[in-house]
Amino acid sequence: QVQLVESGGGLVQPGGSLGLSCKASGRVFSLSGMGWYRQIVGAQREFVASITRSGRADYADSVKGRFTISRDNAKNTVYLQMNSLKPEDTAVYLCSADEGPLGMDYWGKGTLVSVSS
Image 1 (cartoon, rainbow, N blue to C red):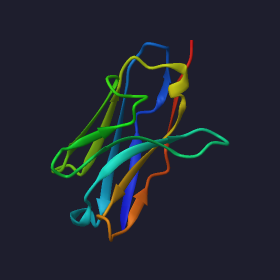
Image 2: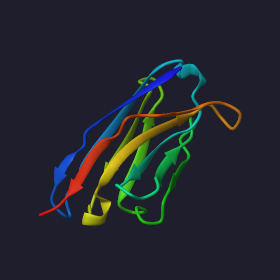
Image 3: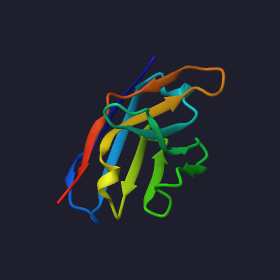
């Protein structure tokens, strides 16, 4: 089993920046990809960004150029740096991790990001 714990959410003004962290614990040696999703009430979970163990990153079009995902394998932690935040970025941000295409998927409980003036 793998446990994921997010931190770093909060309230920020439009145009501001915020950084999120997600630390994995447990059977971390089995982890392959890690990433971030976001969800607002009444809507489907939306992909934000992902990163492979080797550092290849992928982003949703809506956050390209504004968000940066990174990963520290030694610390079993994935980060999301969010710049130029917009009100539409307001959501609960959830950390995800997987054990490859044939393995388990894991989710954190989420951290709330609110972008408002």
